[in-house]
Amino acid sequence: MILPSWSRRIAVLIALSFFNIFFIFFHISKSIPFVVLALIFSVLGMYFGSSEFVTQSESMGERFKLSGKSTGLIIVAIGSIADEIFVSTIAAYRGYGSLSLGNIMGSNIVTMIIFIPLMIILPLSRSRLFIRDASFLAIAIIVVMMFSLFYPSFPRFLSIPLLVVFCFYIYMAFERKVNDDGYEGKPSLIMIIASLLTIFFSSYSMVNYSLLISNTYKLTFFESGFFVTGIGGSLPEIFMGSISLLRRKKEMALGVLFGSSIIKMSLVLGIVTSFGDVIVTGGVWSEYIFLAIVAVSMYILWTKGFTSRNQT
Image 1: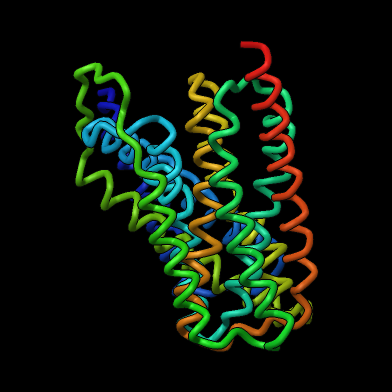
Image 2: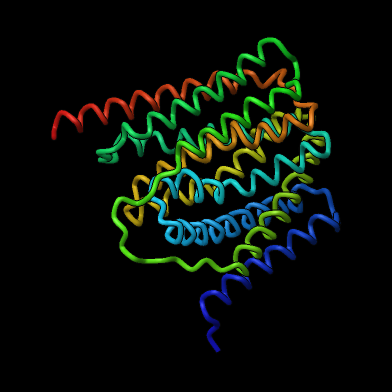
């Protein structure tokens, strides 16, 4: 008997959830193969869970008549970083805020580096519209950098301006469809819950084994978050951006890129900072690298937009 598509998808999510629950509560071995296997299943869980959540988010975008750009910037972007929201919040709650900062910076840098060549080669006539989003991202990282210069660890009140930036950005990013094709998506509440649970358990497992790696190899929490959790956590955004490109939804792809990065630098970092204990010593270099990457992205978008305007 061939299961319906949704049944196969939910079966995969349930299976991955159980595997990650097993790795969370049953540490049979701390050997390298076992740890690697646990990390693989945590990444797979976040990958498939985020993928399903974004699919449902796209349906919600259709239902609420959002433009492709806004769907990518808001709904799909939040879905693509649902795993990192869980990872960073769990780590901060347990007192490992530096791991959360490394996760945010690592995933942002990896995602932007991969998408920069796409920004160069993609024919996108409305590229200049994303300069505003890149500016929001630059503002968020500049705010973080300024506080890093004066504080060895982020004060809790820093969460307030970061959350303000997030709220204002969501308000500015909200954009309705120009043409209504009459189609209404039908998101499934069951699939949304299943995907979120899969992401939650996978993220929890990722945090546990990132801490294990930190202790075993004497890595700082920032380094562990950057190289292990951060790089692994960038996979959902890369996947969602690639899928959008394959479906010829270029604006949605850039929306996922900038929306997810802005949300991580404002909402996620704001939540993490509110728990306290975010030590930035040793991680400031990542802020300079990320700001430089954002500046390059803004230049590419402005140049492409200027060229497209002159050709019309």
